[in-house]
Image 1 (spheres, rainbow, N blue to C red):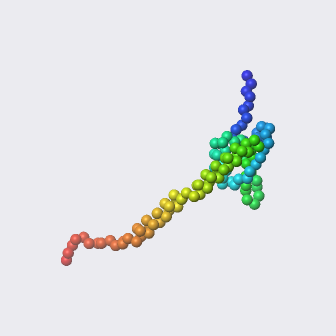
Image 2: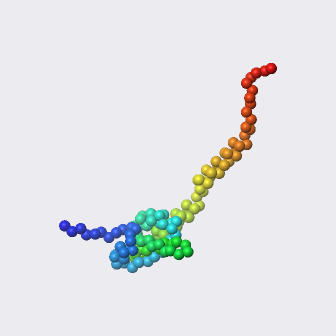
Image 3: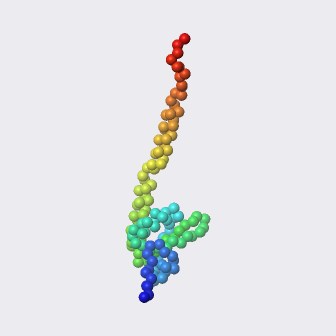
Length: 122
């Protein structure tokens, strides 16, 4: 019995993407946003391929099928909105570090005087 190979979904190689006989479009993305974008693309069931462009600053091109352009636009809008919301939130680690410094200053300000009185009177 012959098994037919299923077309790949999600992240794939350029060759696999080109074999699907659909026009290919691309957008540019930075390396810090790749993982976050992959989860959004997976949610929208987009077939895409990443290509690294070496130069002065390393960039990545995300190639996707031309017929997925509308879906890609929606996914990219959600991704950018999520990224902006994450930047607006206050950093918990920074707040924790500030609280630690404040506690350290309060503890340093306390009197470090130890009394050696053992209750003896002369």
